[in-house]
Image 1: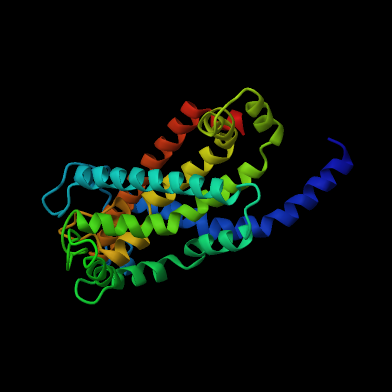
Image 2: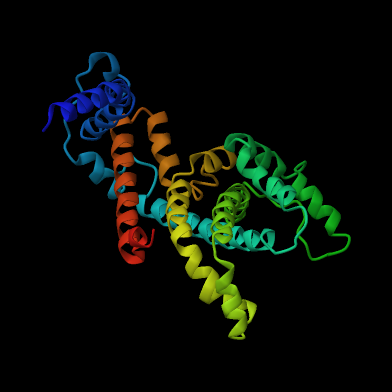
Length: 306
């Protein structure tokens, strides 16, 4: 290596080193510390003493096999977590793409206004939106039941005084609605940007072939959207799978833990002082998401498409 190359490399290292040290302190150290805790019986009494007992894979085994001292069934929580995630993704993608197609309709006036209004649910902080919706689902004074009461004058078959947060599956419908409200703008913006990059010549060629709008969508629009939407769907899966705020602030996993997801259950272990088990739980969540990401990349070949 030439002397000039060595000096340039040295200069680059000097610039990168401060940020690398900071990232190591705030990211890598807590990460590896959490991995270490996962193999111990770490609890609040060990914070000062720093002498937890090494338990190997016992924490993982207890979580996966529903140990008697744990008040949850891992497989039940995991099953609901997947139902919750895929249900949200279906609505996020379908609503997002549909609204993007409407907003990008040629000749439509006020596109900027519509786009700004539709992105508002995404712009508001998650915990604020969750708390507002929780109040709206109040049985007696919530806006949702008051609205249903008004509509019953026209549609008598609508229910009255629905217990949204105290019964299942009503609680699931409630958190699903909240998360769909907050999640579709992201998919809409990704799809909208991808639609604007599609050459108009492709649609002109499809018109010359006599293709109807439905055929043009599946032969032109959908394939051109795939490179942008596949990474967005992967991000949406990870965000929704770990969406702590909506579940915790709206239902707190109730009723009777039926709307609990893995990340909220792990948080409750922390609240109970089971730091070792909570770290093991986080470790399990990481590998579930890692496995999904690797399988999805292989099946869709998203990296080659991009």
